[in-house]
Image: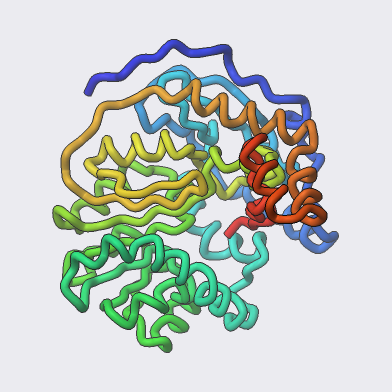
Length: 361
């Protein structure tokens, strides 16, 4: 497969705050910090790491950061050949499975031992509506009931609006999630993409919401996914896009996006090109990222988006340093709608964008 070459601008150079381990930028409680310290000690002793290769196969990358938002050591590199940002090293397969079974929910505030009702309601009230509206124009082509599979679907709330017209399946590793989903009338299977074959019918729509950036072997997962699809199947992908930082998400702060649960950091360009190289045609995409793909089997060429990714982050960093996100919020509070719209159009400020308050799933 050929590579569409583009001349690279100067390399991305981030400020010293991206290299200061032990100095979290979030407002964690003492209890959260203690749990984080406990996990950090545990993973150093029990989780061997392996080098992470770029998804384009390129061998040239450079270091852009060494810490995550919680202050833990977490080196990131940026690929010169395609522009994808990835962890320099990551846990091997077995430790990663252990992390998601026993640590992830506790560390990120969604402990499965808690009452599941609030999280399920959040999924029903926000995620399900957003997801259904994003895909409904394209799911009209399917005869009802069509088949929907949510991979890593937690309590199953995201499937609420689909259940009136589709047969719904959910895949997850957590037994409590699975039982809760079954109680809602959803077919639930323990596992990840490798268990997709247990859904007897090739799905019409597969949901990958906030999961692709967590995969350590994305190529393997996508190949497995394709083996269970038919030509014309749809795949919805949702993940935090680098593009949206400059629009105000995370207060334009890339460091607030960095967390050890993520292996890769995509822009809409790098994600679309990755999916295209696997035979998926982009039907709809935004900077969020929310994206819908159709499996066609027709593969695209590799394109180098290094310059675009660097420009996204530089733009966000510039706005963060000069206080644009807080100015946007201030304008939204005090000015009439007509003047707010003028400011937004004149200076490209998304003053209605409340994504800065978004949290990691």
